[in-house]
Image 1 (cartoon, rainbow, N blue to C red):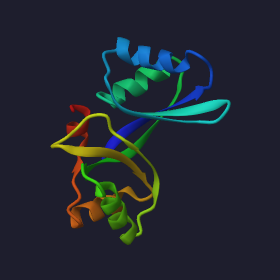
Image 2: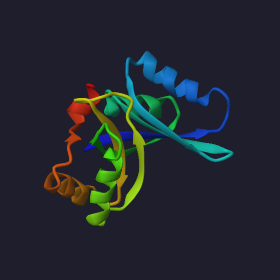
Image 3: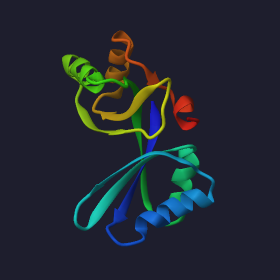
Image 4: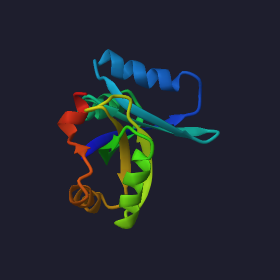
Length: 142
């Protein structure tokens, strides 16, 4: 499991750059990100090199921040690789709330961040089906 930081942002020019500047000035590296938006607000989801410190620094900077447990899964970097993993998760009746791709690489695999409804069941399923995932230390140091 890993910690994802979510930041609630008004959909205004400069808000995203402010978040990234606050993290950059603190020497915290963004490893993966996703933005879901509406016309007025957006949710920035990020995996960073030091999530505990990022959470604290962003809070102190006045952002609305939350922490969520997610799983970084290694997907075979070949046609159908993601489909195979998703089919195995479907067979195990795992509900995926959302996912996004990771910018780094690991052992020549693609990396995908999964937020699932039942993280313990997902971890057990991944072990049983020999789906590789990264622990938080591997993820934060890629």
